[in-house]
Length: 299
Image (cartoon, rainbow, N blue to C red; front, top):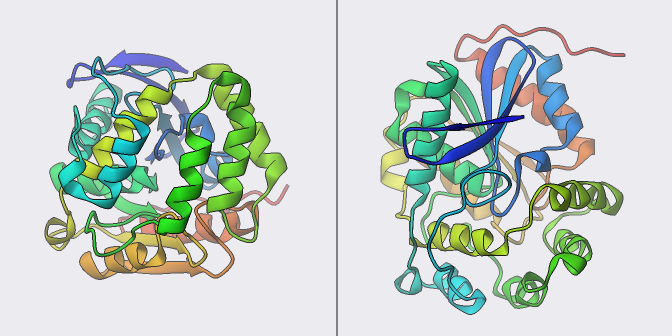
């Protein structure tokens, strides 16, 4: 892993793995690059991609923004009603960070895979920098419309009790959160490994609150998504209570030619049992943009 300053002035921590067509992984709210599980990442490397993953601004080892975070209550209120949303930056700024990283790496075009908030950032990247996106994969995400993809209100009440706390309780709180938002295939052991890995790198709850505010304050992307021509895959779990399935359906409808892959036993997570199907769908989508790849190893 290494770091670089991109054209937005943000220092981005990143890692490049494998050889082949560049594929950029964009992680979600409060999640560091190491939240992409090894089976997911190396499954893509094995299929012929050069995988680039990075920490978004305000999380992990990338720049922290010098701005006061909203309170937990204010951040949650902004999620429910946009008029309460105030943010030091927007998802579009985070998309510009990603484009800046591609500049530094000399990557003209990349296949882009984003999860949750990362899907929102990836959509913004395709809207703002269409020439940089070869194919778009939006996972458990939404369009920014307040009419779709909203979290269940009962879930927000439960999450409010798991957000606040220090380093000592982070791992256990993260597992509780995982149980609340994931589907039938939630793996607590895997969740613990990923949470411990993240905690060892960085702990920045203020950044999570600022990222939450950025989501809430960013505009609806539906109309702009309708102008995209990039091959697009939308992946969503039908058990997702955080970004409800209507968000994935709306994304599919908004982007011309987009294809939907929905799993009945997946929530707001990427269960190991579904990774092979997700990998193959990503390869098929990238192939629509000219990717040739290679057969996955059976060893």
